[in-house]
Image 1 (cartoon, helix red, strand yellow):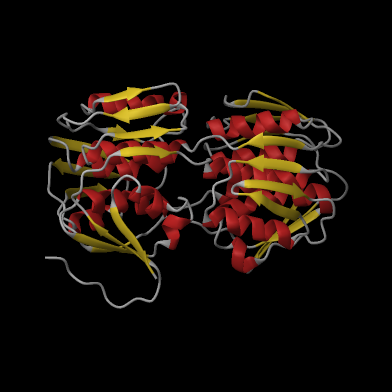
Image 2: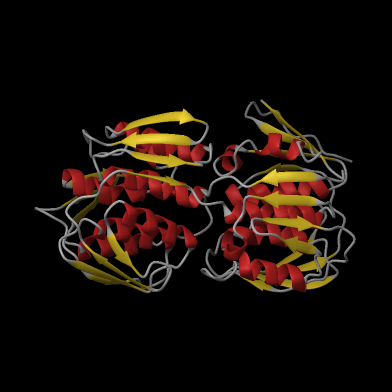
Length: 428
């Protein structure tokens, strides 16, 4: 029997699971690409036009930060933004906003270029493990930035101009790679970034910067070379499809044995994901920009290990773990990126899953198990979408609270799920 949740005035999702789903769902623009493009718009005083921007809370918070330092931001239509940072009037980031958003650190480089200094708090975001802040600080210093840390955050200053450098990342970090890339495009001289992250979002950022006059080569490899230029011009681009959202929707179809077609994706960005689905026995067909789940297969347990791109993205680990609760056999889920990312599995156990935590990086899933509706609290963005998937395949009613965490990464998720036949309601 469903256990009622304590009274909470915050918005929540009420989900009645067990329904077969059917239909087509389109992937939105990639959150992890849009945030970087919007932050990079501060590098030039000319207008950038960015389309296919997802309408999610993290984007709204970053736009507040852009406006807070003087940028003019106009949403011409749904997801189409005109941005012009002609006059940067402030170099301090609003702490109440920046602390909620890990991506706020990306604004440091443009502010240093345009104002010679930047002041920002310790960035926030999902509580999924230690963030490698030392990489950012060491990288800033390599470009000639003076870093001063205090109780409230960081103050960065430069004397005249950023200087190109050789910087070796001690460990692979997507956001650190993007931050140093933004530092280097207008720095004096040449920069070499070694052990850089290779994610397609980095390639998309570099490609657009090159369209605007930057000189970047090697993006998508561990070695990125940048020759600094004096200025960037205006430009127009479309945000690439969100590969994490695409994978999550495909997993929903597989876990619920529903004929769901996911459109608007780039299949080449999910090669390892397709391999794991095949190993798990999922029947699917890949199109030029789509994927279709064909029901009637028997799920088999497979082991997975997250890895930096082109490996399986850590952001797909939680949805895939839900899929493994419905598979026959034992699977080992090895999360190599964040040591705090597997704690959501206790919520799945409350729903009836059989998951044993071996250590902070590994869990063992015994399947298949029938899931039952429960009252749940979303701990972060990616665990949040996994809980929605679990609730949709569970018997009975579930209530998911703290859905701001889900809204941070997924646009109008309940409305899009409803079009597939899901019984999911947002209750304020």
